[in-house]
Length: 375
Image 1 (cartoon, one colour):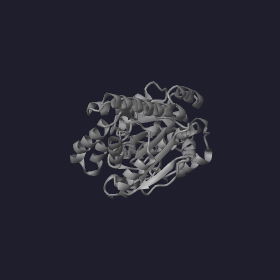
Image 2 (tube, helix red, strand yellow; image 1 turned 120 degrees about the horizontal axis):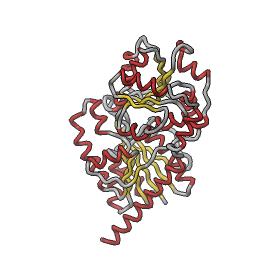
Image 3 (tube, helix red, strand yellow; image 1 turned 60 degrees about the vertical axis):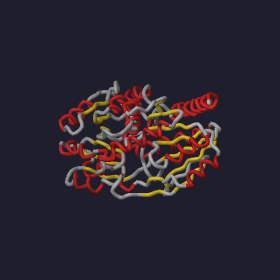
Image 4 (cartoon, helix red, strand yellow; image 1 turned 120 degrees about the vertical axis):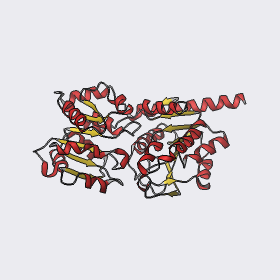
């Protein structure tokens, strides 16, 4: 098939949507599909075998840290139409996604929409609480046009359903094999720990340093004798440096996936304070690396971590609950290999996850054909 993927985010942003596309698009290409990806300018990192096109964007510094939002201008419409897609896939459609939806409607092209980001909920963290319902109205309109709707997790699907949006498939998260094969590194641990090397247990956070990730919730760990390493960058970094001033907290900046995998295997605990993620792919990566996990309780993290032997949930904003979860997660008594064996039953490969994407495209084609026949 010829597939036009229209995404609201792309590299250099680091998030779950970009991770999915970086793995899934090359897999689709390897299966013989032709793929066009439209993303906001500026972007980096081409996709092997796919055609990647930049469209005009706008950034507002106080909204989502100046994230570039692609604009549904004539160039975007023209690129999709000239490609003559068999399927259009709008990824987390909000603004640029209008181009995908309107072309699909105008040309009667099968349309898939996938929901990955709590954009409406994020608005609260940027002084835009009053815009939540308006954002949901946009999301409902866009997803209502889809032949097939996907969500990033069962919890995200439940949220769609709560807003009257039909869910057809869950696009499962997956993990690269490198997270299972990475080995602990003394030099990486030394870098993560800094001056605390050898004297404190080490907790690791990986992700965007943004207000909605609620990383301040991890302060009790650093106050209670843990060394804390933060991998990632983002608009909230300066505020976090003030929050953790004087504590054994290291800011490592953005790192590649291989370093992240080695950092996970070299840490004593992975911590995930966010309750706003639709899935949290980094949690899957952590359990694949065999590191104990303490995550803030949310529908997504509860579903993902249920039954894993070294994963514990804590109540968001409760320092005592965080410390109890950290202690319980690291007191499991199992080897890293045993933790990874348990994760094998929970974590998919990107090949298996892309099977679901292909199935969504095929279902969209069948449904659109049925609609045409009934018209």
